[in-house]
Length: 359
Length: 108
Image (cartoon, rainbow over all chains, first blue to last red):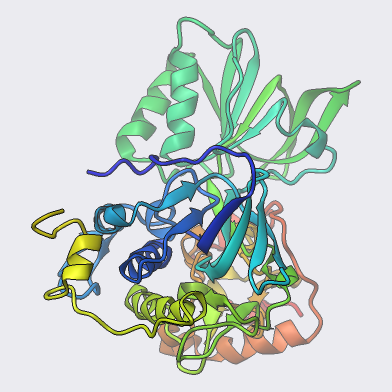
């Protein structure tokens, strides 16, 4: 199985690349493959810590039945197979960061900047951004924002030591209950108290994990509160209390030193609107010949684009990526007509795929 | 195409859906949320968030809820404000969540 977190590039000087792919979901990954067959190397940026996009973040274990010649595979299996397929193309991934700016340059290319400070000089750009960048779902209570990253930690962020602290964990999924249980059961770094909070006394975590949580509560190692946060209190620059409302309308003030908000990640359509590209209902308008946007050399493929008859299907993203790769080749190789070659017979493609007899 | 909030939401309004919407297409009324069909991009991320399974794609709306397709559009266009952050559900939401035929309870 390929390592999904491999090939993370370090930040540094601007990186010159013929193609930059924004989004490492299935369409973005297949874009890498099609570009590779045309001998166009690329870099890939994604907001998640691993490639896979929605397949990994929303439905890693759900079966997919409409991939050609693959009667059934899970989201995770599809991503692993795509990573194996694109391995010969040696893409470089820049993960856990979003593209923040795309600036056209005099030479027709683009300067692209990410939230991690990585800069690219890209000849062509492929937006495979799906329904947006996955970012943590943050707690929204007046006055709590200033504690983010210090006493209030969200999904995907590093958790500071909980030793001796009164910890509240908000969430109802496997990750939230696991985290609360690990804290309640820890010998070293033992918190002063552990409280799990969720709106209702019903959980999306597995029944076995819920049973473990209830046992830990019964044994007094942690407690569960069915409530929602509605406010907070602080002393100086320290968060001290979380004000919560229970289902019956009564409110309660819970002392807190560390608040873990484990609501997972959800997509947000990012700054694409600022890149000067024509949009329709927040989706990128493309042609159906090259899947190029209103800005020459910027292509959009997969769930992020729109055109007459658009269907948000992975298989359509694969087609779009194929056509976009040829569209880019026409810009990047103006003196060399691009001919369609077949992977069954082409010795050139065999060399690119690492399957030539002398490779 | 759009996604549609069906009657199950009436008098509950759990608001889990609004947090995950990538395009902020939910609009809030007194005891119901609606989806603005001009904004929804059919990403389907909100569907599993709803604790009462009130949201579905337009083509999956069952026969007894077909009227909600037009109602979502009408309410969104009536000027209901955008809601982008989750808030506590209505106080008696849990009592109403399993009830059907709640259309007469809808407040505009």
